[in-house]
Length: 289
Image 1 (spheres, one colour):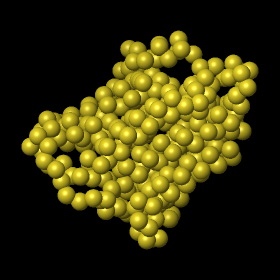
Image 2 (cartoon, one colour):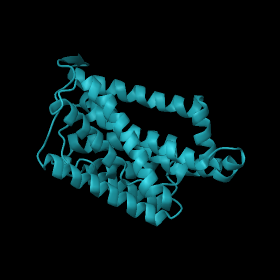
Image 3 (cartoon, one colour):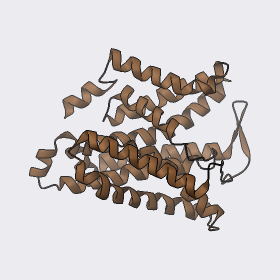
Image 4 (cartoon, one colour):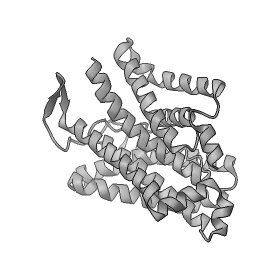
């Protein structure tokens, strides 16, 4: 029981961290609350399914192509729908909600409401501390952890990461230093959406697909960024694992817990807003800005 909780908590936490960090990144740099973030996660999963099942592609080809395609689509959506109204936060919020619904309805029309799936990339299982864990779950965990390390290296060790962090701290100063703030925002949107697409690629062999699969990750992602502090990368990372383990504990220890996991995340979000609205790391983040 304990081993199952730990393994599932680590896998779910890593996937939620990818989603939440991408969401916090685009908010911190471009001040965009992208409700469609998890819709792009779902879109990548369906692109991979279509590539494997309808076009006969190898999953190893379909996955990177889908991630790149969703990243390009995210930039196009930014240029058409979000960029022109970026300074109006309420309008951006409404636009991203509408964009998520458009993606959902397009997938319903294209694939129907039936559950879909992609076979595991590798079969078999390993026994870890007396618990059987499939190689596919171990692969998903490894890819997610490596992706998180890659995101950290991108933000902390590259000139692009320096530009993103500088713009997040002060857009006006970044402009004065010669950075094209609008272009940085567009690049950030592309990176953010590709992180969501990468999370979608990781979960494709693990979960069934349906056109509403973006909603639960959206609830978890919003709860995570509120818990960690909106715009805080570190807060999103820590909050992802806190809520992932809370979710797994509810599912494993409470009867009918699978129906309560969304409620638990929302309850934690409401409590944080009432007790500490800035989140776990919000104060530090605001001081850095």
